[in-house]
Image (tube, rainbow, N blue to C red; front, side, top):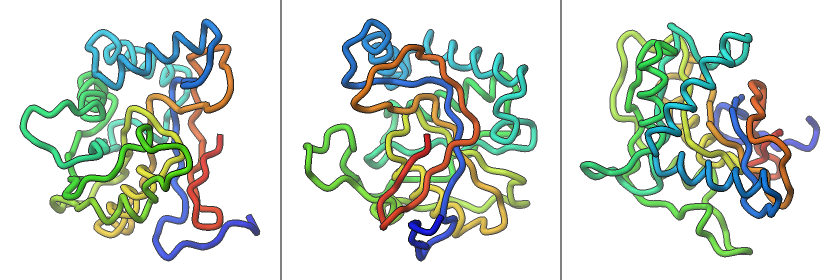
Length: 219
């Protein structure tokens, strides 16, 4: 794409899949229900996380998510916005554990750690600067080396909005594992300023990239 400015970091884009959609500002019945589902998944409510695992397993049986999950794929949970403390609620790790329990990956590895807090995008005031991919990268470190290196890595998160967090995480992992394919799976993708008609809306070939130094997500 001619209007995409090449970033100084690699990868220049990350491919992602997601299972559900969520309309944070919607008022229709389906949109309001999506807000409730998103809240339960963000809070790691056991019944909803288990349902996510079941739905993803069902999608795999139809041929979806073949590049994102499987016995050769290492899952890496995306850290929360602040440094981890003991017994901290960590939705991405809970989702990874559910997928591992269902045999949908090779292993779950806690490779990323947040050493400095960043602002939560959902709590940033309108018009204020949201954390950029570079801000996320600067707040993260890769904890250890896997020997041998993973065959494939899939970052796992509960929600993706613009994709800054996933891109920053991908840059951090790529610095340690430059030859390993890195993709992402977000359970929910945010659909801002619109209504939705169906919460279940799986995709497996979305893109997150930079345009004029700003993260963009398609779809």
